[in-house]
Image (cartoon, each protein chain N blue to C red):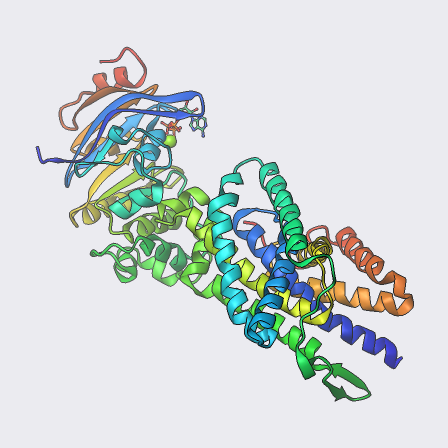
Length: 236
Length: 288
Ligand SMILES: Nc1ncnc2c1ncn2[C@@H]1O[C@H](COP(=O)(O)OP(=O)(O)OP(=O)(O)O)[C@@H](O)[C@H]1O
Ligand SMILES: [Mg+2]
């Protein structure tokens, strides 16, 4: 197994007094796609928020390329090379499509991704570049959100439910580009409700349940029964 | 008839100054949802800094601006990073209280430093110069003030919509969390926004000091004019602040023409009328 580019060690996360995550251990090997699955409210988004710095943690709880980053701010973590495609896309409504993409490049990291590269990946965005981001369809918005994250030339990209609310054909086309993205030497951590999809694109899978890891294993080895158990209690 | 036309013209030009009072307020509110109660006192502070600079160095107030403008911008950045950022959060009360306290502190410091005696900035012959316009005559200084206001607002508009800095301002205004994910440190972005707002305040303060005499107590009144111009124009619209300033200015000068005691009252009535007809102001920013 390649060396882990990111690891979580006993990660805990709180919203005020409410604890949402209880000591999660996780390893993301460099260059691989890791899937996170779990029921609604299991803590998947919270995990990604903790990694990306939107929720504060203890320094040692998150380690990126050997460096403890748990206590860094989100903008500092972004500059180190972690990008998040947030749940619900969350484009900036006051900005045009192109401005959203340019903002993604604000971190100033070098790499293969540029406006042109993103437009080559999603040609429709080139056509719509000067329109307000709110004028895009859901699928196009997701493309823009992915493009915005790629513009940062991250080493690790986090996807939070990129298929949520999209038509199956759109989901298919978005997942088709995933190898192209990860092929650029990027590592990906994806949160996905569709278990079949999650298993088909990832090398390892983690299942969360009520803020804990209830199952982890190689995507081609975990069984349906194990997943069902890990999803709905009676942890495997 | 000609006197009324003159009152309207003077009001329009006065509106430029009010727009400058308003632009900084609008910018700050737009970027970080902060209502700065000390804004008027910061304008007066800038006027005093202009006074000290022009008297000490023996230079024209416009030249003093070369020092006062960067100085106010630096004050703005430091104030934001050192104090105001700590007050921002889901609760809107702390920034109101803290900027109110700041307003009291600035007034008292100015009183200590400069006494309560009215002061004025001297712009020399420029103050009395005028150009004939048909049967009317327009003062060069009011005309210049209006021109500067238009230029400042055009400049702010350009910064907001055509530069990386402005893109950051709009992004942080839309969604602070996601903006942080893009590598923007919001504490720094807010600092830059306050620096820019107080740079505008520096210009407003110098122009105010040339136009009328000032003393440490007049900040509150300037704050009200700024507020009214912002609300009339519509929150979040920079050109709206100019329209708001002009409406307020015209209402005041026309009111004063009817009866000198009505100047301020007429301005407030115009403000209330606009609010009654268009509660969101004339050019509210479209919400998405
Ligand atoms: N902002 C918040 N404040 C308080 N509690 C929160 C907040 N966001 C999430 N939670 C709680 O934290 C827990 C984990 O939520 P999280 O959003 O991480 O789940 P999730 O696995 O992403 O779910 P979903 O599949 O619905 O997106 C839930 O119990 C949720 O109610
Ligand atoms: Mg979620």
